[in-house]
Image (cartoon, rainbow, N blue to C red; front, side, top):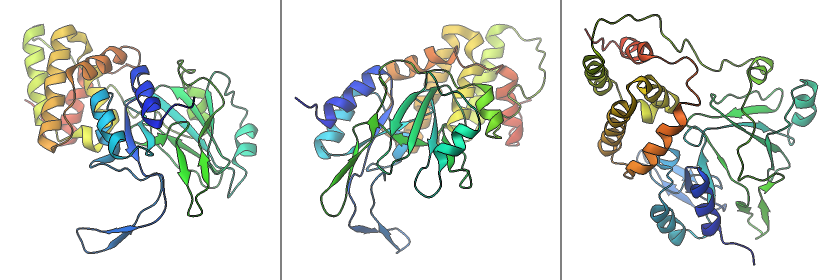
Length: 297
């Protein structure tokens, strides 16, 4: 018996994907706050804050799919530690262009899209980009994709699905520097933000880092990768650093009026940071503050 979208959404969340519901149908429109009509189309988030409210909370997911049982299963890629190559095979022959780059996609998870394109899922972090000439986009950070078995219902009632060609419940290959180089992308920008030498004790340094966090703007809503990098910067403080990062993250959610995040979810995210540190140090955190002219003296 075929599983419901709710059952599949729960399975994805239990595996580690942070998910949220998206529209699966064309038709209708809503009036925006500025008085303009917005057409409603598939793939649009169904909830406030969209991708930023993605979660692994099974109760919340159950409530969403109870309200929208046919919703497409969206996933926040950065939160799920996924990077996706989006190959368009509709307007241009993106598949030929991808193969011409000579990049191996062995070990990636392949997903056919409703339009005949291809999504390649990798583990790891990277920023979203668009290359309409090649027909090859990338998705990562606070961007999202729709997971397999989600489907679009056309106006005539026909359905077109995202189809997994590989097992989505294993860890895919880590995205490589070769991919970023051949696509002409920059994976991260100056992650260390310079050298930093401190005469403070560990406890004093942690207090300084904590005060700096609360002086930052809401990076979680603006740039997911910076939120992650703030966590990486606190890894050296162990469990105490984790507690500071979690408290700050929950403060940000409350301030923004978003769906509350369970501490267990944040602890899980913290446990993944050690695998994607990429040279991030406490200097990174202080560098963010300087960038925003909120220098901590």
